[in-house]
Image 1 (spheres, rainbow, N blue to C red):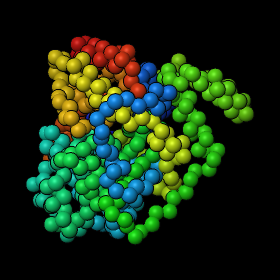
Image 2 (image 1 turned 45 degrees about the vertical axis):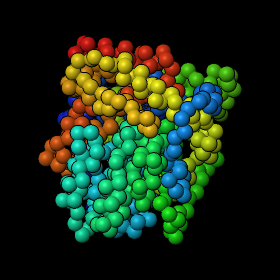
Image 3 (image 1 turned 30 degrees about the vertical axis):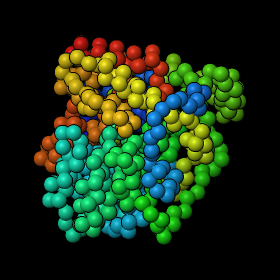
Image 4 (image 1 turned 90 degrees about the horizontal axis):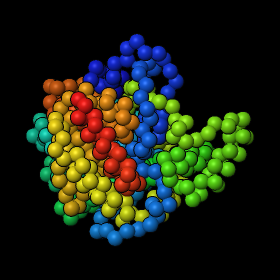
Length: 430
């Protein structure tokens, strides 16, 4: 059985002699996990794509494949539930082992609890590729599958792993949560796994969504239901208000504000929406924290709003802007001391999810970044307690030193300049 993880000193900020306050979960940042701590300002730049009218305007770009080209697709509410469905469809049972990367987030591990499968952690290399020798050493009769992750949009070389899985008789689940678009060796991401999963909200301006790709038609059926209309409408409208709060959709702002006013009046509340109304965030929140898996959501479909938006937005613009923004961050942060980009080059077939930066003294720099309201995440900050420096030294180091900044397609030039300026200021002050 999966055990409840515990926070270690490097996973959460200490919270000393500060008053308890109510905190707000800002979309894209995940829930707060602490109750006491210092106040930090909410980022005034969205860490995930918001919806703008420009999102529907195509631009000239090289053709990229996506995980949707890898096989038949099922659309669920989040990537974590796509992993859970892959586990169930593979017929795994309680006590079966699944090889998992030692560098991970909760969304990758918690789905195993659906059938009671056990994570068996394998090592990664300095460039985040799979340590295949360590994978071979972890193979036992109880191991039935392996999950391989394309981190931050940079595809893993999976041909050798696919060959290993075929020889060992275990299934390969290809984790494309960070790699919705991209090619590797002439094949789309997601095409190596028996199953592949993806997370549209990391790339598209939508409030929910997960993708499960089957390598071939499976005789097993997946029965999903839609959320009730009031809940679905509220979710969609909240996302529109969220986008408006971050300075988008001004052309239809009167309509959004009117609908919001009427809705709040009906509920007896007149709370205004806007970044100036977003309360400071309490230190301790992290998008990778454990405890957010809700098995009931496995049975729900990706919302109609998200499905329609994913189909309508311009993929060419998304791809071109993400690549351009990543390169601008590379150049803007060049020469900074005590840090380095994890991927200093952007291969021609890569569409990045975020910009990962290694910081030597992140424990010192991170609070400064928070105080400057820099939008960021720390993937792998919370690791399963079975994983430590002896399990995988690289994962342990990544957990303590890696921070990621947005490069999504909705960032403006001014917002990118602001992010770069604030990062440089935090590092210069350290």
